[in-house]
Image (cartoon, rainbow, N blue to C red; front, top):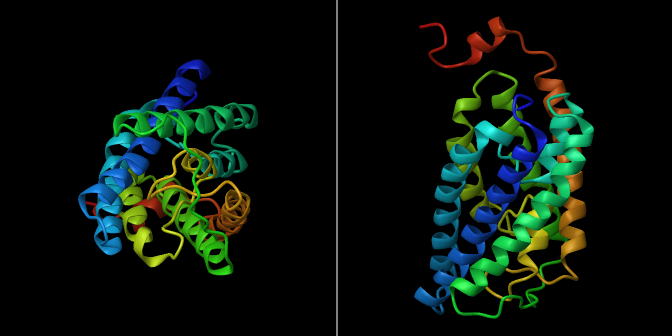
Length: 236
C-alpha cells in the first residue's frame, strides 16, 4: 500500500466506501420495494447483493488502498504495523464521508429524499453482542488471510462472511463504524436510527479489539514456511 501516495489511497477509500454504502442501502431499498411484506426475502436479497458487491469493490480498490472501507480494519492494521497510524487516522474521515455520500446517492437513485434520518431502532443487548461477534469474525477473516499470505482470497472470503453474517447475527452484521454512520442517513430497510448508532459503534470497536488479541495469539509471526504449511496448494 505504501507504494501509492496517501492522496491516491484516500480517493480509493472514499470511492470504495461510497460504493459499499450505495450497495448496502440501494439493495435494501430495492428489496423492500420488490418483496413487500416478506422480511426474509428482503434480507436475502440485501445480503446477496452486499456479498457480491463487496467482492467487486475489494477487487477494484484493494490493490491501491487495501479496500479497508472500515475504520476498525484500518486501526487493527495500524496496530500490526501494516499501516502507519497517521494514515489510519486519515482513512477514518474519508471512510465516513464515503459512506455518507454513498447513502445519499442510494436515496437519490430510488427517488427518495437525499437525506432522511432513519427511524429504525436497533439498540439492544442481543444487537450489541451480534455486532461484537460480527466485527470479530470480519477482522479475523481479513488478518488470518493477510498474515498467512493468502490476501488474494480476501475479496471472496470477506464477501462470503458478510453475506452469511447477515443471517447468523440479529443485527444483520454492520461490523463497520463508517457504514453504521452512513446508514443513519436513509430511513429505509437498511437504515439505523441515530440513537442506536453509538451502541453499534461501541460494539464494533470492542469486537475489533478482541480480534486484535485473537489474531496475535493464533498468528503471532507467521513465516513463509508456516504460511506454506497452512495454505492449501501452496506446496504444490
